[in-house]
Length: 492
Image (cartoon, rainbow, N blue to C red; front, side, top):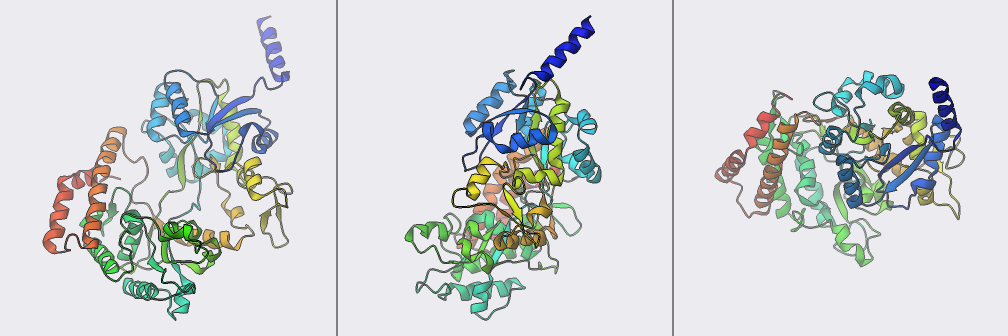
């Protein structure tokens, strides 16, 4: 009788509309108005998987932080955190508190698409797993992720009769020429040769000196071992170049503390023309006028050692995107729902929607959004799509996105691929244990400030770039723990 009653109860649950729907919540940061309750994305996912969901977004970071803090204390309401935006520290706290479940033993049985990807790329599992092997959340996988790129205004080079630079000296000569000409033709001397903001952006010039350094200021020496980047001889040559650029007017006086010239001058009404000779950004249109995007070319120059390499900024795995809570009665069902998004043909739902409704494909195989006088691209993004930055779980449909019918987008995406081909990581994310990582983060904060300040002082002439002063700076960095930081990552 008990078995019969249980079976009848299960049947009634299946027949009751919404009774078994997965309760989904998460952080929505899209700038367009996107209501998860009415989003076509979730209803289409239900049609695709046969799994019903009820989705409710949180729109303010402060409110979401309170939700996560409540979960740690046992106040768990939703079944799933979608677009969860969890840091590794939050993952550990939530799984240790029992608020989210370990997904490691559930992936193989419930997620054939993700399992195939992890089998083909075993290093990805190492990134998403905690130190003890538990898996607290699932990632976004993006094999053609947007890169930070140095862009040079090729149209301006052409106007000056100059070729693409192949050396640091040629680059300096080109930028110096740009600084003294009315290349945008607006009759004003408003060209900024190197429109670069802060030391963070300047460090993306290090590959031209044969150095790939990360946010820890760590790099690889000639023998492949981890070193503190400022200790490398070529690092001083990089700072010397910055000092030369300041002296020649290539870098503006406030480049180390100010804002991009285009942002600062945008209120003048003349921002419709390009002002920047060289910019450092994932895409030119984040700084320069969008109509000038095609004028900019990715500048991949070999380093002093003759090799062309770059820093892989974000990596292929963006963690913390999807977690299953302790309230979920069937975690396997939640994983089966998500697994659909690890297949390229389904991942398009989040990025482009449905063919014939949201986008169309022309005879050349190029796709574009379907818009008219009423429905705009922003409307489609709000009503049908779900992708926002690096918080969306699943697989990025890279091949499909490259077929977009947008010369600007294709130009940027193709540049990403060229950069990705020579990009490398200095250290893998989460390579350290919890205690070592906490210490590394502490050291990186202190050392990062000292490195940035030192570069700025030398480049602006506040401190003369002499042997004595440079060695004094390195000694200061050693005393602050640069050697300890290197030792923490020595085996990585």
